[in-house]
Length: 330
Image (cartoon, rainbow, N blue to C red; front, top):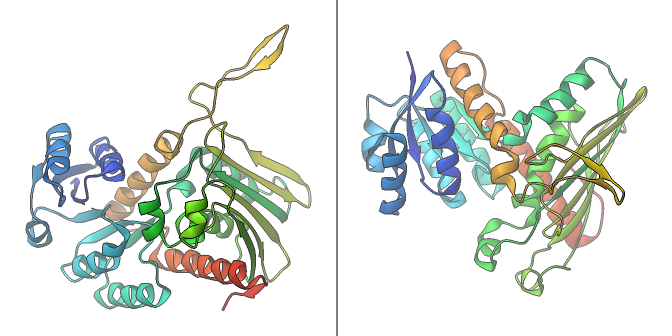
């Protein structure tokens, strides 16, 4: 039997997940809702589902699971609401921008026994999966150093910055999750710095557009993270792991993977221009993993606890950058 979905939010990321759901033979998109009616109608027409109210999706007997793609400040309330009616939940990161609110939300999830998966899509990128598998197979021995590069082509609008929670909660949070995923060990200390080079308005709003982070684990492993809201050459996404027996790296992906050599040198096509194209496979793979877990009853991952721990690292980084000191993670 197919897993039957309700989609909450029909914006850019909602449309990505609608495509992933309808492209999976073990799933069916039953209904969509959005406060912006034209967006909901567009998804309904494109993917052959109904437009319903949030209340109708909540009480619907023909919907098993929901995908939450609404604004961040609605996530925790919606998770609690759908936990109480027994529907499985996939929610885009973050659960909330406040650690205490996330903890309260996860208590409701635990009390109701609901299934919750948090959308850290990069865990499902084919290159990063291969990286993790190589590490698990011992290809480079024991990891000692890691470096994660994550740089956007350009900054988001000021209105987005105002509600984003800052670069560490909005952008670096993906890298915090990847560090935990790849190192296989919790982070014990965070040192972060931030600057404003790209847009003075970002600084006026109390945020950074350029940041570096050093993460430490109890065993001494180190991970550095490099973030920027401006990469003139494209969407820069790379990971390098150094271990006791060697090094492994996942390089940037391009829409067309080829290289031309001529008298002027070696030439390759430009990088992807943003996450919507760079992580197409990752988005499809994470929804497929969620569907498979619901069908066979296995544990979903990333969990709500993963979401909480990544947010706690973002909190520590924010404090570290503000107070210019190393912060221990409780």
